[in-house]
Image (cartoon, rainbow, N blue to C red; front, side):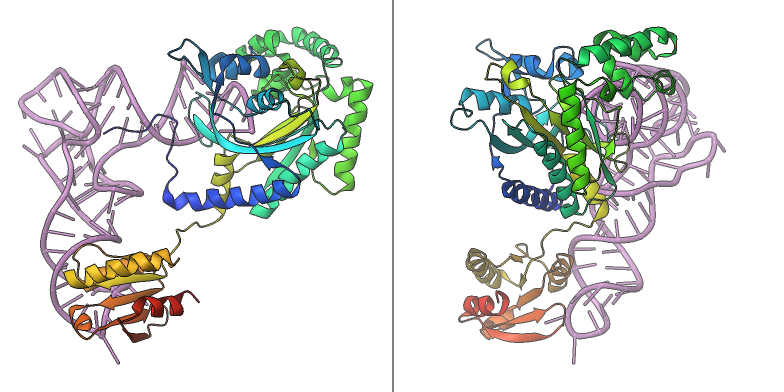
Length: 418
RNA sequence: GUGGGUGUAGCUCAGUUGGUAGAGCACUUGGUUGUGGCCCAAGUGGUCGUGGGUUCAAGUCCCAUCACUCACCCCA
């Protein structure tokens, strides 16, 4: 038997209703805030990701699906969407008539990690991005939208964590201070953190190993090293959040795994998914548009882990497939043939109808109708057919009536589509 | 990439110190029930993840391999 690729998954019919529900709720909300949908390719030139996400990140270093195509181009299945979005923004000169542009996009991403709860090699993200807005209001609005979406979806037990990562001006100062502390505590660090120290020392703050936590306990916080502009920006963000009753916690340890982030960063965390605590995350990337060849343009955005959101909601609610309005139990070839014609017309008219196509007993057909939770069953046996009628049974009330088959389609539509 | 757990009928699982497979649900047929939901009876369905090895004999022991899963790591 051929099985699907490791870390990939099928989203089965019983689950898609929930996916659609989330998608509908999200797009309605984002539209109301002035965000428009953009659809992007799932493959890009490898260089785009190397330059935006950062050569030294885990994603670029060892998680991307990269290959050479037949023409010799280096291509990569996108591991995230922001890079493509920025590329598209620049390529189509969307900044020309108005640098302020807002987008959302939904689709699959690919990272070759070890599969785990809430972590797949093909996973889905809902991305929301805003370009060209410098001021702190948009930062608060992003977090507000996330909170609102989760509220509308009925997600419980999540919390917004907020931090600021500063800018290219203030981050080096913090980095130096942190390195000084780490040098002194080198022997307390785990092997991973010793490696990280050279590469990306900020990540040590995020380590969960007890020894490392202890070592960085007295570590300086990024927020204490922000330059005046960054501090001012962050202070206002927090003010706006507080004044508008948007709940959040200041998380001085929050860092990002992608290099392009600056200033405000945030993450929606949950305890419902084991080790995968982040359901959504994002922040500012004020230098990215310029770094990829566009005009200096501030940017901010977030990504929601669609699969993770589905899992949380699936734990909280019972999902069920839509139930047929009508099940036709036909006995005998002749009756089945007629029933088949009726289903064509009824379904075309918008009635959710089902029937048994195999030659099965009435008992088996009633059993199936019951399992499908059909609201009504139309029974057409040999006798009924000879008498030119069918019996319509209401499965809830158990009441049933005879219907003439002369204009059965109109009759059923009248009764059931009301 | 590293570690732990699991892999027996469509589903959930039993299977004792190795002796050539079982239950419940589901499904099929029949009975009963005013034509389904309860009950009764019979039946279909498994090369015990895969490949080696030990043994007279392996679901049961050993090795390898694959898959699933949880955690590390990383991130959404």
